[in-house]
Length: 126
Image 1 (tube, rainbow, N blue to C red):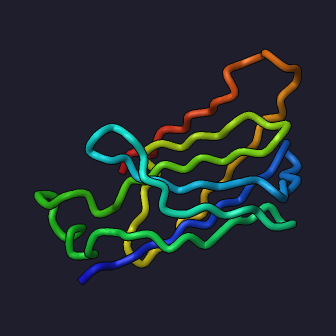
Image 2 (image 1 turned 90 degrees about the horizontal axis):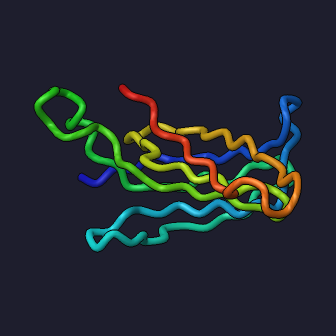
């Protein structure tokens, strides 16, 4: 039976965690041809929150044995807002029946032409 997990995106700036409303959050999956298939797009609210995104996840039984496939699904998350660097999250792990809260510390663009505008955050090992 197909199961889902959910993703809640929380954007903020600085150590004070000031919310960033109006950021665009895009959830995608990689395809066999090396491209990305967009599954959902949301805009953060006045609290800097987007979601929850309901996303397909493997059956919980896949976590019962180390010989089985990963007990999670991998997704790509892109978050952008004018005036901030693009935040890119690869291999974001979504587990069945669990809400994942992904904090997005947005980095302000100091001056045009500095940096590459992309932040890549790798997944945490299990």
